[in-house]
Amino acid sequence: MVERQHTAAARPRGGPRALRGGCYILAREAPGGVTAASTKPGTKTPGIDSHTSKEEDPIMRMRKHLSTIAGLAALAGTVLAIPLPAQAQEVSLRLHTLLPPVAAPPKTFLIPWTEKVAKESGGKLKVSFFGAMALGGTPPQLVDQARDGVVDIVWTLPGYTAGRFPKSSVFELPFLHTNAETTTMALQDFAEKHLQDEYKDYHVLLLHVHGGSLVMTRDKPIQKVEDFRGLKIRTATASGGLFLKALGAVPLGMPVPEVGPSMAKGVIDGTMLPYEIAPSQKMQDLATYFITMAGPQPRLNTSMFSFLMNKASYDKLPADLKKVIDANSGRNLAPVAGKNWDQIEISGRKVMASKDKNKFLEIPPAEVARMRELAKPAIDQWVADMNAKGFKGEELLNDARSLIAKYSK
Image (cartoon, rainbow, N blue to C red):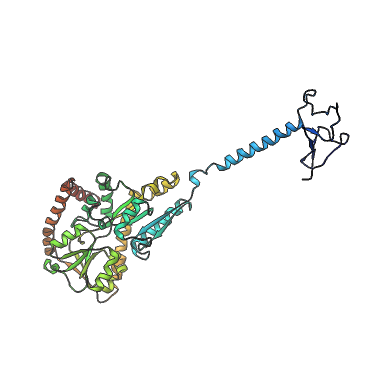
């Protein structure tokens, strides 16, 4: 703005300021706070001599006016600096797991879960899926990645870290499991009573099981107990290993991604797997015999899965996003998971049946009865191991059995 000067005669009334075009135009000041146009000795300039006029010094009014503007600007800045309400925040999380996105569990459960929470949060909660250990590490390290905050969420098997979650393994014992939905619902009750300490380092989204493991072999049909003898069979869990050993087999523990290559190279003769994951390991090509048991419990056992979130990642969520997570976890999610795993089991079997070479066998009732007897020492060993760790092994076993029976009605 160009500054203009006025003579005493021409100056607008009110001293050295005038409002022109909505802007103040200030006269130049001489030393001592007197305008250059009124320096004649003895002259009193209206509005300037505060001792002889009731009118406030216009310069002071100007300074107050500018001070007020500055104060309002500072207040506005303070208001703008206040953080937005928690409900308006957007959050990105990372979900890490061992299976590729094309495998049935990610495709039918994990990825749809991320999409559901995104939708129900109005797009404010984004969970990015990383499969096939894309963020590094090995499957047994997933639980530590979630605990330590390397990632926000993991989906894995507690059985991959033997000894870390001992009480959880009761559901993996032989002849307890019936189907995915029933056992998963029983597991919710069991976890509330017995597993709080095992998962204290996590915010648990869900504990669940799959449809159950059958035996898939490359060359050997199994119709009686003796057929297991000497076979190298992969298992995911320690309790599964105890059972296989009781049957005369040689149990080998390994994560799912190693099963296909191990079968192809002859490292193993067979594997314990559910149908749903078999296509991801090319079992329709690598295995020939798919063996279940006669009776109400056709699978040898099941495996337990843990869907775990880093505690800090959950705790720092705003309240509205916590509600979204809570609505899609625990008892709210368990029936969804159970039904899903029962359904994808059917789809997986169809893939195995797509090859004419493949044969589906059932161990007859008399041999299943023998297998039940042989399983008893393995179950007793599990109870003894729990007792040695300071837990009540018999109580854990009985509670698991009674809860499965409860949800089977």
